[in-house]
Length: 169
Image (cartoon, rainbow, N blue to C red; front, top):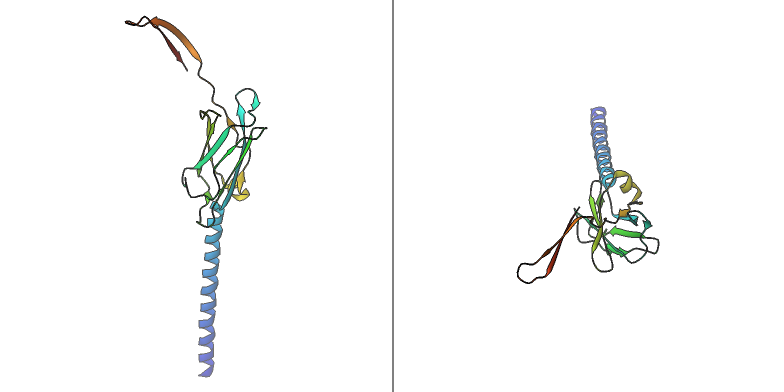
């Protein structure tokens, strides 16, 4: 009788041990799956470039917004270009549990010294970038100014002023 009781106790301990190990393995795999999809620190780096002429130089403002999590980050999500046209923006807030995830869209906007938007780019975060905790070479090319395709001067009906209409692409 004692042998059966000891065997039953060992069996229940084995089942309990197996259950705990299985639960631990599932927990670890779910943690790894979450870690594989997002990161608490994400560094966005690149260069603002002219259409035909290389880097812009310093003085352009660069702002990046995570479309999924637009606010709540600890660090400022805007900076100015350096003299070689480069910029760095860091998404970081582990206190609030914010992460930059695979497939997040980062909307990058470049403005000149007068506040005019002169460049835009949307960067979609990849698994490779999450694993590296950042993306480099996210270059933004300045928008080309509109090209005039027709200019037609006309005289205003009552005032005699010249009205110029410019159409373009």
